[in-house]
Length: 67
Image 1 (cartoon, rainbow, N blue to C red):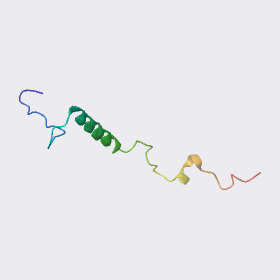
Image 2: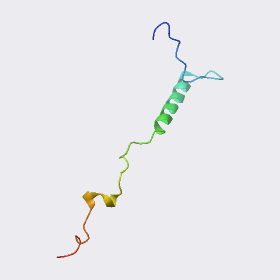
Image 3: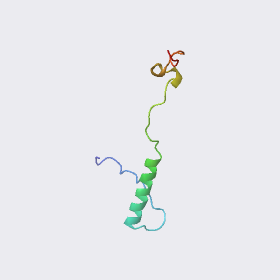
Image 4: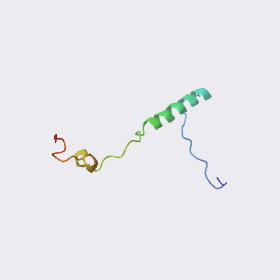
């Protein structure tokens, strides 16, 4: 940050009252945990094709019959 840059805007603003430092810490912890909970959990990418068309699981019509 140089001397020409304006100061950054606060992320949290107290509108009324005078919270104690531990109250602000608790509020910050809650807000951060909520922001992390809002993100979906990473999982496997969606399949492009249906499972029954997957060549690795394909079985020919006569494969299951006894010899």
